[in-house]
Amino acid sequence: MSPTPDPSQTPNPAPAPAPSQTPNQTPNPAPSQTTGAGAFLPLLDPPVYVVTTGVGDTRAGCLVGFGSQCSIHPERFAVWLSHSNRTHRVAARATALAVHLLPPDDTGRALARLFGEDTGKEVDKFARVSWRPGPAGVPVLTDAAAWFAGRVVGRVEGGDHTAFLLDPLAGGRADPPPATTLALRDVAGLDAGHPA
Ligand SMILES: Cc1cc2nc3c(=O)[nH]c(=O)nc-3n(C[C@H](O)[C@H](O)[C@H](O)COP(=O)(O)O)c2cc1C
Image 1 (cartoon, protein in one colour):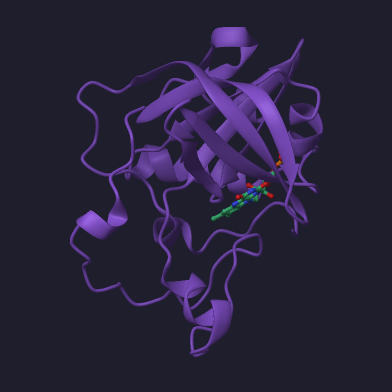
Image 2 (image 1 turned 90 degrees about the vertical axis):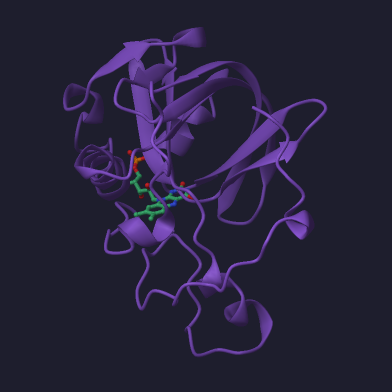
């Protein structure tokens, strides 16, 4: 993972129109709001990730929009998991998580739908996808655009989500990698498996 460029040094394209509807675990104040966070949040279009984990024979994973690199030295990345998700319950006992970027095609959209709309309380998601055991036993999705596995080095409570602070162990990507990866607006029609 290389350092993220300073956004103040990059061009600032005009924001795309805000979606009229986003899933119930993503911040979506009314797009008409012009003050406070409601003026800002609907303009965001971050990547979406599938975060997976495993403890013994128990595997879990869900779609995540809340994630970011959060340190350069040491290299660290944080993902935020909702308290209501089964993935949070398993991740609370796990030593590592894997974070996957998805290709912006039918395969990526199908993975986003499965991991974002279904819950592992009812569906064995890993019986429906191609995966292999990765570092520290985390399931690695074969069809990801790119992935890394990280050791959990901290947890921070943020409200109804917990940040899992990850120290990267290993990673990989498709060859060739896609030019872009699936982002929040690409999956704006999905209904999250759990309310926040
Ligand atoms: C677009 C989108 C973004 C989401 N972002 C997050 C997120 O950042 N963190 C999270 O814990 N859940 C997020 N979710 C919700 C979970 O992916 C969803 O509730 C999932 O069904 C939980 O599965 P589980 O119970 O097997 O863990 C998001 C869902 C969608 C559709």
